[in-house]
Amino acid sequence: MSTGTDSHLADVLVVGGGIAGISVAWELAAHADVVLAEAEGDLPVHSTARSAATYIPGHGSGPFRALIDASGPRYAALPELLGTPPLLTPRPVLHLAEDDTAARHLEATLREQRGEPGAPVELSPAEARRRAPVLRLAPVAAAWTAGACDVDTAALHDGYRRGLRARGGTLLRGARVDGLRRDGAGWSATTTAGHRVRAGVVVDAAGAWADTVAALAGVPGAGLRAYRRTIAACPVPDPSVLTVDGAVLPMIADAAERWYLKAEADTVLVSPADETPAEPGDARPDELDVALALDRVGRATTLGLRSVRTAWAGLRTFGPGRAPVVGARPEHPGFHFVAGQGGSGIESAPALAALAAAVVLGHPAPADVDLDPAVIRVT
Ligand SMILES: Cc1cc2nc3c(=O)[nH]c(=O)nc-3n(C[C@H](O)[C@H](O)[C@H](O)COP(=O)(O)OP(=O)(O)OC[C@H]3O[C@@H](n4cnc5c(N)ncnc54)[C@H](O)[C@@H]3O)c2cc1C
Picture 1 (cartoon, protein in one colour):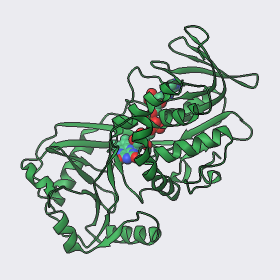
Picture 2 (tube, rainbow, N blue to C red):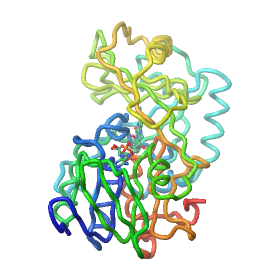
Picture 3 (cartoon, rainbow, N blue to C red):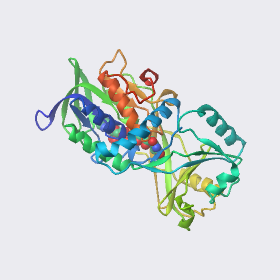
């Protein structure tokens, strides 16, 4: 509820308008009066706007794999709920091991995920080459994730934003929360745009800044660590090689996580899968990382990449154990983290938002999300 131009009274204040904040705000707004404060005027601009936009079953730590699995059917249902176009487009992933180190990595992954829904399956090196004729390297082992997809991240974020408004939520843009203190049973917040928000509960979904926001509130951080990752879009001299058997080339990823590539229009997106520790901020690509990506993909494929059309970097912020961090500490009730989405914040968003909203509201966990909230609680 707005109590004047700059004053708001709400059940919940969500801090951060990336995919984490906007999705959990939408879920919460079905049950509560929600105000979301985002520091930037445009959104999304930080990690959410810089991802590779992939949905890959079996990606990441166990909790993420469960959330990604539960997000699949939710992704299918969201277009009707949010009025978006279809959000997922199939794009399988080919995992390649070009040496023994990568082969051991791949074998361990396949063993760990055996029997899990959507897990990658082993593929012969010959079949891998048939499915990706652009390969120069001769893989020693390979695997295939059939159910992987591209995500229309912009439509997803926009759908949640419009959905939040339709549920009566308020979005404050250009409003960096710069003051946060306990006020009776709830919280009082101020923003750099002069807003004052009183709310019963705070949800800290500020991505790489989540521990900074916690510090404002006098709450210990969740042990988050941010790492920079780089992507370069490179024109492909002969774009016809990006189609195989009438379908777009699969995403191709080194099983030892030294590079990956993904076709996009007449370019390929290439990444050296870098993980450089970084402070929260506006990440910029390092020339060396861009050169590394070109070199590694150049040696692995016959794509003949010679130039970079554009390059960017973003932050992947991990919680302890590379699991997301959701909920409040008993000694700091009413201050909930929804953070630490690492490299999976888009693909896991629908289920993570539903689970986090249930935790914040004290509701039972959603039946379709096979993850005990205790596993991802803040410690
Ligand atoms: C190169 C790269 C590739 C990736 N690829 C994938 C992929 O293929 N699939 C996938 O699922 N994930 C991927 N990810 C990860 C994904 O992008 C992130 O997990 C996700 O975007 C995190 O969302 P977020 O909302 O937590 O963070 P952000 O999008 O960074 O949002 C946090 C927001 O909080 C705001 N904020 C900070 N402090 C304050 C404050 N005091 N007051 C108000 N607002 C504040 C910031 O302005 C920001 O907008 C990738 C990430 C990178 C960098």
